[in-house]
Length: 93
Length: 462
Image (cartoon, rainbow over all chains, first blue to last red; front, top):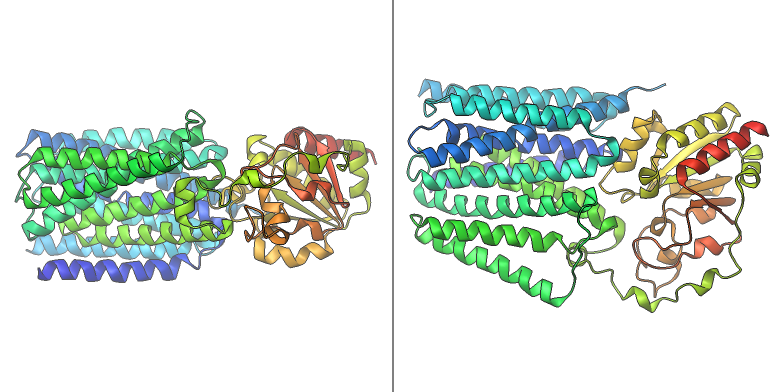
């Protein structure tokens, strides 16, 4: 139970940090914010790796494989497209 | 223990990099660096996880990473900027789907997650499966709508009841699953109910409301990741997930506020009072002044300040480059060109900004609604290009209007308003626009891209 409370604490504090930072992001960058934060939510890949790499159950490994594919698309595609967009904002005459 | 501590330390570094990365997005100058910091954080987190001693087979992982990376790279490199809303919608769905799959894997491996009490695992698995599955199916519906392959938009009480029933079913099955985590049938039912709920929740949402639903799904994909963090007792997932959840939630709020509608109304596909209540058609008869490109070009001969108001129509007509060319022509003649961006212009938050940035319009020419509205007084010509409801004065002046109270761009304060539009057809709200019959307004009936090119040619000939 104690570890659960620690997790909830971490969750609550991170939400506050998120609110503080995100409210300062200008509307011009809201699309890159969405794609970039999307890439960050691909952090699920960490859980997917554990599920795909555990050998006990073939079913779990198959599910893990699917999770790794989806999360990796999210991470790789998300950071790449964000970079592509932000590069357009940077070039300025 | 030391190996575990090292992994935890790496996760902490990753979480810090994510936070600093988001902080970088507070300015266009630091944004690229911020994004790279986020990517670096992800790399560290992945590499640290690969050293985890629970992982004994690397073939599946390598295959999954390779397949995912190839799909991600191809998609990100080839996508058009106008298709960005679809891409973000699809990626939201993948994030939710990945979380649901990890939850399913955890459900098949009972008791193998060290250091996490079984009851926390079971509850979190149910939560992660619920949010993740609903995010997946909801995002795919949003994607299909944005891609233009799904037009079905049912509304009404029956849909409401079905939607609520599916949510309730999923919650009940989730509760039963927590009591009996051995039952895979309950888990499968939970997932099926959640998938159905995601579909029913998003299917009523129409075109101009898409920014809200994409922001909401963005938030959900983050919460799904956080729920997965609770399953695995992993703080980096919880931190990253809640950052994304907060981000999507803030954007959802901004979008709702910019439309003066509650999230609830948007999800029901409800436009407030019945749009049919307002008089249709007649208000335009004999009162609309239209202009040809050569007549309209005369407006720009003496204009000192021109403001462009782009809407979704500009994206559809792919007119952003033609707008840029026209603006550069005016600037060469000594005219100041500004761009007024309504928060819900386009199909996702910030959509117009990205399209204009793609066309090399400097971002300091772009003004948000609150900044530009007081500046319309000094504007000689306002060009409304493919926008409709967001410039409708009824939102400000007619308490009976369905969109009354929605903040608008006050283009009618400019000296002259040039509205470029294919026809007098109503915008998403389905109501007439009194701006079109304003004494100051000239209509130029044309495709957006062609109109900008025609105007540029005529202005060159002046």
